[in-house]
Image (cartoon, rainbow, N blue to C red; front, side):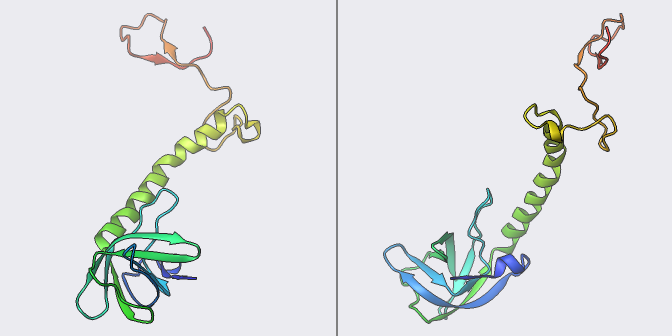
Length: 161
């Protein structure tokens, strides 16, 4: 099992670890611990580098498989089992992904709440007229105003004729 440093410290940028498995055919190594997020839940995996003495080597892919987190390396030779490596995340990318994920979660919340309120299969989730977020049930049906206003683009949200 790989110790998942990203799960306890999302702001960690670097770490040291030992190689616990090497798959030379696939060009990947599994580390005993990692700060590289392997992707999941719609989020992409991290990128960065690992260094075991001859300079940093790019980590091009990260994936969880059977309890291990594998790191694909852009290197002609891979470190063997037991070799200590230093990992460094592409922090600019990770931080951008974190901020984007947060922004998308915040902007999607009003839609989730509205969907919960109008979903016919979820009557229990339907807001009451005293809903704290201001939607009354049943929702008014928008229609063109028939009151003779001069602005044809003005919508009326009244349920009365």
